[in-house]
Image (cartoon, rainbow, N blue to C red; front, side):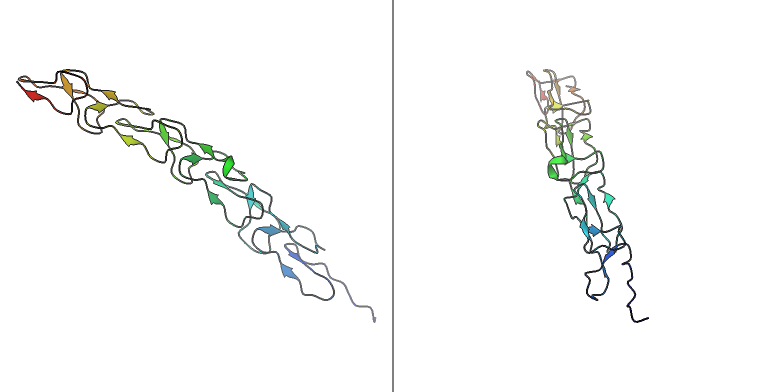
Length: 178
């Protein structure tokens, strides 16, 4: 009866030994072993925000989690991540031309009609200038209004000049009286 009793550490904690008290694993680490001497960092592509954890969670879409993460980090504006488990910023995909991606996007958003994205990696689409238009979603540029028509900024169609007015060439923002 003079032999001291040994106790296993609880899952999610470690015991340094030598009579040291049991210590919970910190955020970003875990252990699922009863006699752990140290906690293990969450692998890249996963995270753990709480202490005393027995495992890590998959990094959500629109985010990445480096090794030992306690919080998912958002993919930068102009990029997106459609699946879980990204381990670093290079796992976020550049937004294609004709679409935009705000920070933390899980997918790219095609530009609305009357707007465009001429290059990949944009966080927002540009509106068509006066004298240009686009009726389509996902445009990479705007069309010039043809002669005899005009358009205001952010237009989806070219409007015909009214009787008694004209535009003699493409790309006019308004018509001129005869």
